[in-house]
Length: 229
Image (tube, rainbow, N blue to C red; front, side):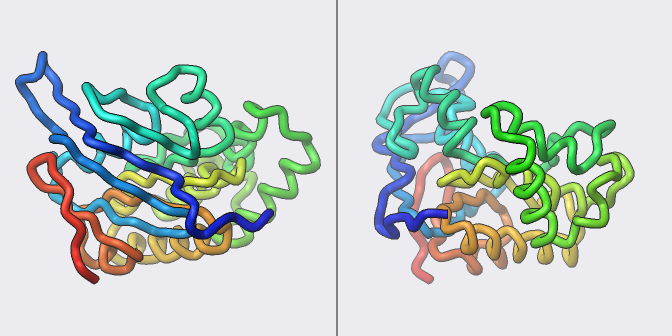
């Protein structure tokens, strides 16, 4: 993988606001955020604070009411840019893994590669590389529904990294796991992010995971405040 500029801004929000129900439910209020290459940034806050909404805006899963967004050099409010971001520049990890249960680990991992027309040999090599790093190589032929919760989430991490994204968005990736498994999955996520030299924005309600990140952004009542670490 080519070296990336460690100071490059990969995600930026400026004065972004978002509301629902005709403006009656305000979720984000004029928030600004900048994330640089190589950083692991925690969006830390309680459920309903707005952290998942901010991730969805950065990932092009939703659009803001007002404000400016730039992700990997593109405006995610534009439909054509959203497709480019999802295929080539962004990786997503969700609290519920969103894998296809009837497919095997390998089949789930091949889907992102198929979407960008990656060659069969190159895809197979990438599958082996990623699963070896999370100790899943022996489970490639197993269906998702036959895996443990931790194995499913490790598979989801591998899927998010399949196309070598520049930015990884992780929405409560340990939220559905027990404490021990959650710690293991978080550790693997951080290690892989550092190895892949990418930026990570992680939404979490757990202070212990937030404190293990490079920066902590407190999300409360739709506003952002950086916490000294």
